[in-house]
Image (cartoon, rainbow, N blue to C red):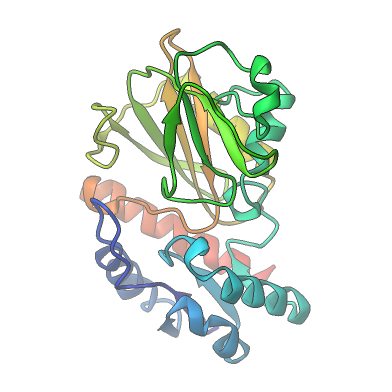
Length: 267
C-alpha cells in the first residue's frame, strides 16, 4: 500500500531539524511500505495516486492555510486515508479546544478569548496573548492589560512554571517523555521519567481526543502548585525529537508507528 509522506524538509524550525527526523522515519518506513515524499503544497494534487497520506513535519499550517484547507476538503470528499485522521479535536482543529477544556474544568492553563472575560482567569501580573489561529509561538506577546476584539486572541495567565514536559503517544500507547528543565529554553530537552500520575494526566487528553490511530504529543507545564497543566495537544504534525531519545526508545517508537500504520491501512 503506497504512502504519500508530507513534509517540508526545508522548514527552519528553531532549535530543531525537521529534515533529519523525516529522513530517519522515511528510511525505516520504506522497509514496509512503498513511499514517496512531497511538500505540503503538493499534497492535494498528488494524493489520489496513494492509498494513504501521512502528515509529518510539514510546518505550521498558518504558513499555507489555503493549501491545507484545500487538501483537507479534498481528502474528506474523496475518503482518502490521512494519518493522523482528520477527526482530531486538538491543534488539528484550531485552538478552540483550550477554551472548551477550560470551561469543562480540565487541568489546562486557563484560557479565554475575550478581554472582557479577564475576571474569569486567575489574577496575574502578566498575561500571555497569542493569535487564536497561530502556531509555534508566532505572535506571542505578554502584557498586563490584554485588549482587542473578542475571538481573535487566546489570553492566559503567565504562569511561573518549573518546567515543560511532553508525552509522546502512538495511538493510545505511551512511548516516551521529554522535558525542558529551563523554561527559557523550550527545545533543550532531556529524557523524563514519567510517574503514574503524569501518565494518568496525559492519557486523559489522549482519551478525550478519541483518535483511533495517530501520533500525538501532550505538552504540559509543572505549575507552582505542583500539578501538571495542559499547554497544547499536538495531533496534526507533532515534532518528535527522536534524536534525543535512546536507540532502544527510538526503535520501539518506529516499531509502534509501523504497526499502527499497518493497522490503519487495514481498517
